[in-house]
Image (cartoon, rainbow, N blue to C red):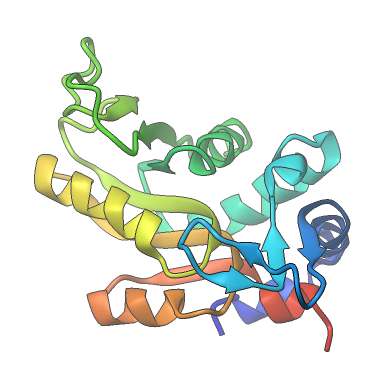
Length: 199
C-alpha cells in the first residue's frame, strides 16, 4: 500500500476522503469508459482540481500533505504542470513557519528559457533549483507514474537537486507504485483507489 497507514486514523483524512469522493471521483458506465492522460481506458476517473480549489478541502490537503513532507524533509516541492501546480501552491502556503518550503513547476515542454532571475534550466520555473536542495515531486493523480518521472528526470539531468521521492493525492493502483519501485524512487499517496471506491 502506498498510503502511510497511521494517516487513515486522522479525522482530517476521513473528512478529506469524503470530499475527494464527492468532488473528484466519477464512475463511468460500462460502455463509456474514460480515456486517461496515460492513454489507458478506465471506469474510474479523478479530477482533483475541484478539491484543490475548495477552501476547506485545500486546507485539509495541505495539512495532511505537510505532515508527510515534515517526515521526508524536503527543501523544495513541485512537479509537472498542470496538476502539480496548485498542489505545490497548497503545500508551500500551508507549511509551518519554522519549516518553510519553496516551490517550483516543470513545464511539459520547455519554452527555451528557465527563470531569468533564478538561473533555472529551461522549463523549470518558480523558486531557484540552481544551488540544489532536497526535493519531493508532487502529483495530483498517479496512474503509471510517467508524469512524475518526467519531472524527476528533468531535475536530475539539469540540477544538483537530490530527489527524495514522489507524493500523490490519489494512487489509482494501476502500476505507478511498481514503476517507482523499479526506478528506485520512494512513493506515497494520501489515498488509493480502494479508499475512495468501495467494492
